[in-house]
Image 1: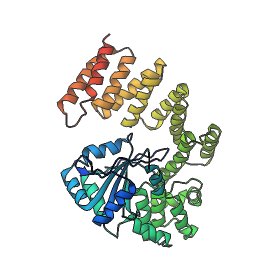
Image 2: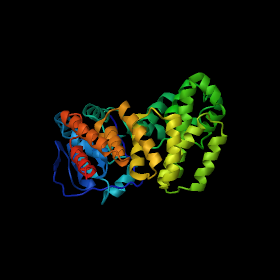
Image 3: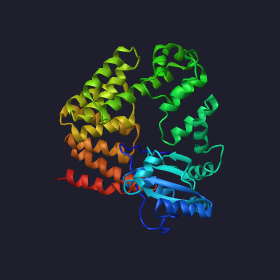
Image 4: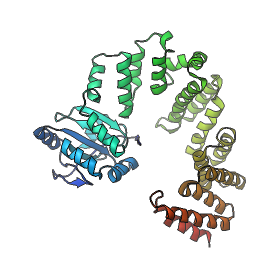
Length: 400
């Protein structure tokens, strides 16, 4: 399991005195970055740095579920000098820039001279986390070794597969290395299997020559690799740009609507679905709930009527933000179907109860919520028991 958070701003901190304080069972050293490197040098060890933020959910999950594991602690304490560093203050701001931290948690393996040996981004289960530590000691897998080979001009296909995979694993951008690799390839060779695998796995830039080639020659790619895979790749690249135009600091409504027109005129087979999907995010960002409810309704009915998680997500958004009774009635039906497809009591079931309540079916809502609470209580290993209090508060409110 891997979870990654990519922030809008990248900041870092290193605090406290050199105390060797323990978080969980891994021994994390505190002190200045110079002191931590000096300790690593004295012990002839690599530094493991957990680069985290206080708001990062996957970071907290690692603290609770992985760093406290005895096997993990024994391996990391004997193998590395461990530094758990909050990335939002102090000395760490400069370190974040130095190590190009673009995702949280970032799991860095650094030598005593401050050079990156290996890195990855995202939380890991215990076995995967131990394997990551072993990979950091294996020259055949070290990110630092691959990066040096790339900087020295290596561009062969087998190497680039490894390097691009390592960049993606580290949560780093692949745009520049992709451009460098494709500059070595003839245009007519882009449809071969190796190049298609690279395009499918890593290409994100809709302005790139490779994406334009994919659009113009989509029929050729579809014949060789299936229309589903080609359409899926084109959809993701178009959507990536739509999201940029909606959510980035340079977000621009004029640019967004112009880009939608380009997609519609492109001849892309899934353009209508893509535009509706994107518009949901656009109108939600603008808090235009009238248009949001219209496009969400159309998108669900035409394309996503059996997607349980999406049905639940949009139904809950209607519950919290939409006032129109007709639309709320639709949301109730979506929520009901979501719950039928996946009877998760905390997510889909609770949303359904909430919509029953707002649609003046409070007796049904109370009955369902009580039933859901009993399901949660019956399996504490599967369901988070902390949700019960909030659900009981809802029942009290609906009972007034």
